Length: 383
Image 1 (cartoon, rainbow, N blue to C red):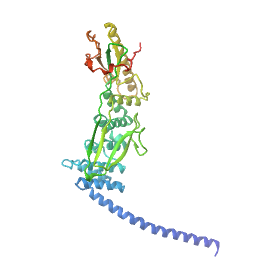
Image 2: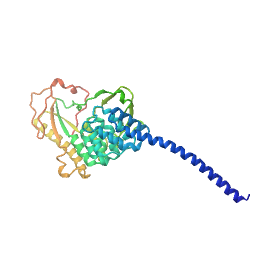
Image 3: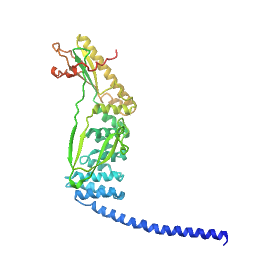
């Protein structure tokens, strides 16, 4: 057989073999595809149910089979549960449906997040909002003001700062509420340490048998998160979110304490690319005063007020320079509040009136544990 003819025969044989393999493979793919399509249609029908447990089971199966084409049906099920007269008694079903939207990489309408904000935890809603933040600025603005969970509130503010800094600035300045505390002492070598009130709320939510295992989303700082966590924000805290599955009959929840005023100020610093931990500008600045001479006392208080106002004015000027607040509104936003705390043991001599300050507070002398030795020395104001 001539060499050219042999090559042609071999090539045809190889092509025939490949075609035969392809023909054998294609029916196999079709065989798998038909049951998948049928399964998805069955799930689509189940997602029209009115029973909460049935909807939760269908959502769980949609995630397991990665049925992306069922996202519209899942969204419709959520909207149906939110209608007046819907099955509002089982919030667990909504958590499964929202989890399905997240796992199937869905993009949702802003109206859906607003409808869900009082029905499910905010963390999964923040995950959905972070996928298209420009479409969900109204939800983020609401969350940055209204959320009670401290971690969720902080994450919402960082998302808003990344994608709408002008709105984030207004929210942060409203939270910061700058204050100067003039602390009057008997001895200038003693000072006080003021801690903003905070609390930790813990509890457990009972999970009905029909809704186990339950998907749950938790926030953590990216500095402390595991590799399984998905980064959510890039702000000063840098939040990450991780999905957990709760198998037990109850779900623990604890709310960490957070100084919101300090957190909002730290966010402003981050937006301005300022050094972290700057010691001068704080939500509450302190100056220690001693009443020896009335005229010197009032002069020292005036210097402290002028210094604090200058620090805050500098911060507002920088925000105006960035175009985040208007120059005409700069003075009205974040006006400095001056309070006077009379921590003296000997209060026989009345404190002189300080222009621009509120009336002096006189806490009970017995309630002054901060006057014990070892507390920090008073802040020295520049002359």
